[in-house]
Length: 84
Image 1 (tube, one colour):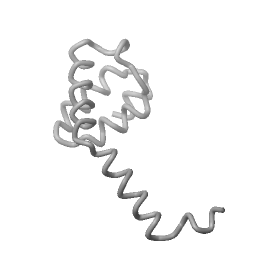
Image 2 (cartoon, helix red, strand yellow):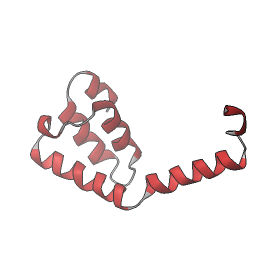
Image 3 (cartoon, rainbow, N blue to C red):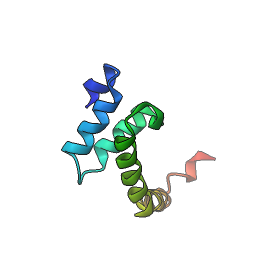
Image 4 (cartoon, one colour):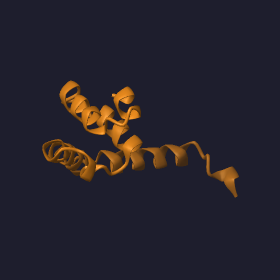
């Protein structure tokens, strides 16, 4: 996937991620972070699949839960005490 992206084959990279990692969201997220918004640069059907997965990830609240867990952990570790 990374090699395809580096070669400029963004559509092929997204197709590969969607095909090879249907239940693992991390490869898709990694590619999305590398490529940035590319809906206009990939096939419509691929863009639709990507948007569906991103929407499902967002609705699951994974990021908010993870963010809150990290903030709580930082507070418990008192890491912010010496930042002032």
